[in-house]
Length: 142
Picture 1 (spheres, helix red, strand yellow):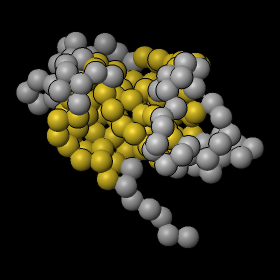
Picture 2 (cartoon, one colour; picture 1 turned 60 degrees about the vertical axis):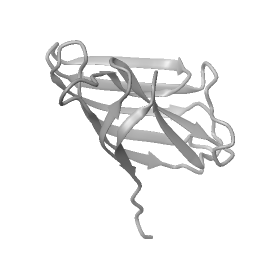
Picture 3 (cartoon, rainbow, N blue to C red; picture 1 turned 135 degrees about the vertical axis):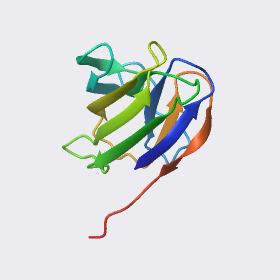
Picture 4 (cartoon, rainbow, N blue to C red; picture 1 turned 90 degrees about the horizontal axis):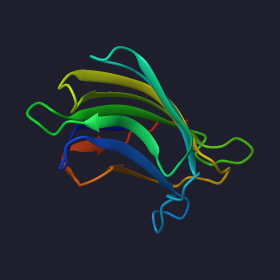
């Protein structure tokens, strides 16, 4: 899955991912539903952020919606059918940070904390809408 030049309506918001197990009728958003971790590089140097019990998977932090601000990502879905191995995600994100207007790069992984099949994904910002950009899904042939 590729996100291309997403712009958030509200400045300094986080890019999030939520999953559904019922085709998008409801979304998994309860506390303790996700575990995630990413490393980043940017103006403040390298760093690491993680959560072992969250309401959504965090892809990037404090996205700028000022001139030149946007966020793009590449995300791989691994084992979406669940079972004995939980579904999980691996991602690489580039964004302009709201705090210092510099480019940041995030590399991370995360998963919903249940072994059930994931059959829908929702990308959103922690506040406001996605005002422009595109999210594209590409498949691999068996």
